[in-house]
Length: 135
Image (cartoon, rainbow, N blue to C red; front, side, top):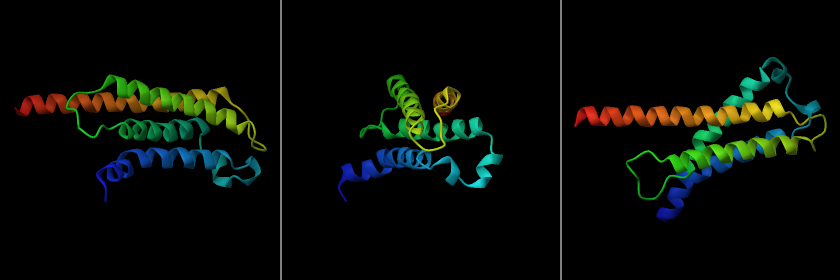
C-alpha cells in the first residue's frame, strides 16, 4: 500500500468519517430520533461529539515528517475548523424537519473544540516535561 494512502487512512480519514457521521445524524428528522436521546443532556452530547472531532482534526493535520515540537498553527486551524463545522451543522439542521438552528448548540460545539485543543496542549506539555526529565 502506498505511503500516502496509509497516511491518509491513519490521519485524515477518521476526521472525515466523523464529520460525515455528524452530518448524517444531523440529517435525521426530529420525529425519527431514537427515544433515548430525550434523556441525554443535549449540550453535553454536543460538547462530547465536537471534542472528538477536535482531536481527530488535529490528528488529520499530522505531517508526513513528524515534528517534535508542539504546533500552535495546527491547533488553531483545528479549533477553527471545528467551530466552522459546528456553525454549518446548525445551519444545516434548519433544513431538517423538526430540527432547529440553536445558537447554544453551536456554542457547545465550539466548547468541545476548545476543550479538545486544551487537552492536546496540556498533553503536549506533559510529554515535553516527561522527555526533558528522562534526558
